[in-house]
Image (cartoon, rainbow, N blue to C red; front, side, top):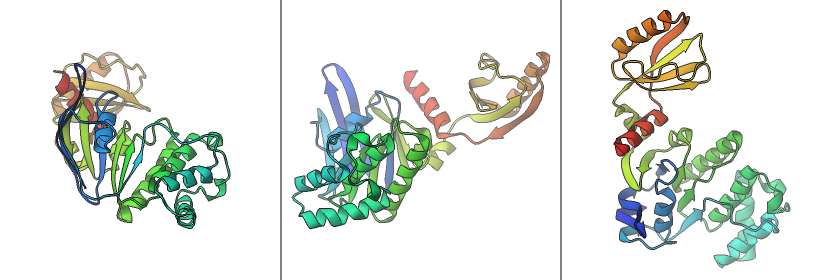
Length: 292
């Protein structure tokens, strides 16, 4: 559905996107992930024809696509249905067609009861659903979304992704950028961007299998955030909930070092066990490779 070949964009001396080549196949849920300033939005805008590339090519296989920008860009002083009517008219759809399609999409998004509410009076999650409805009114085969759940509460994010999965199940191809690693896990294929470059592309499971380190989950009678900084064999450490998440080079050797380290400080150990890497572990590792 989407093919980019060495796509690049420069703003003066800044290379926002550098030689990015991706292939979003029909039926994919393709996630673009990476830190702020990685080039995700610039790449999406080039794909949608909103900005002109400095170099490279974009091919869209299919005529219709829906686009949902990063920021809510509809009219706050119009109702939900007035926004939809306006957007449908832009596609030269007849009134009865807009109404029929709007009712269908609003039912999927649980927004039927809010047709007469002004957009300014919607919650953040509901605004995103309205923007999605407007992007879908032309019944595109391809949907492109730029960080659609940024700043939205966790429950609304879950609801939004349920909708995306239903659309994908019904045959829609989806390209979506996201700053959230839990959303990256939901994609069929993920492309990680950093400093304008595409660092890695594959399925979440294959990407995680390529992770070069092991992960130790430590539960102990301490809440000191930086307690494991500088411990031999620990590449990175973080505190999540009631457990520490340690990236290590040598699983067994570091485990023994950690046991001695904590016992010497009189810290009771509840458990130390290996666990699977997360997408966040992987992307931190990839970003550090780019830095060095």
